[in-house]
Length: 141
Image (cartoon, rainbow, N blue to C red; front, side, top):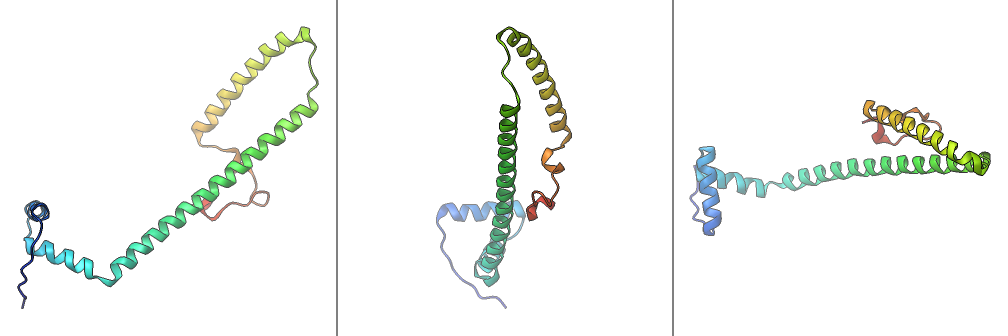
């Protein structure tokens, strides 16, 4: 047995209900009944909160992984620059032009290699052992 209720909607909302009923080929009463049941469902809010919590956890793990990778990249660059500056002697002025030509060729080779590695999906970060730089839990996802 069903109980009849008279409800009043703003014209725009009533139009949306009518359009949905036509599109889905169901009665307006069925749409309103489903909406009220969903609104009154005690676990609806809990499900939504749990979904948000899962998404926030996933985002937190992704941010941790980004922080880890950025920190590692920054540290590697700093160590390289320190090493390079400490072991590379300055060149005499007459050798500067030849060194610049050689440097450009080496840089082009570096960029080509970097492009191939990037396209293949390989990363230097993947080569670092876990015991040296522990992975975050999301790295295995």
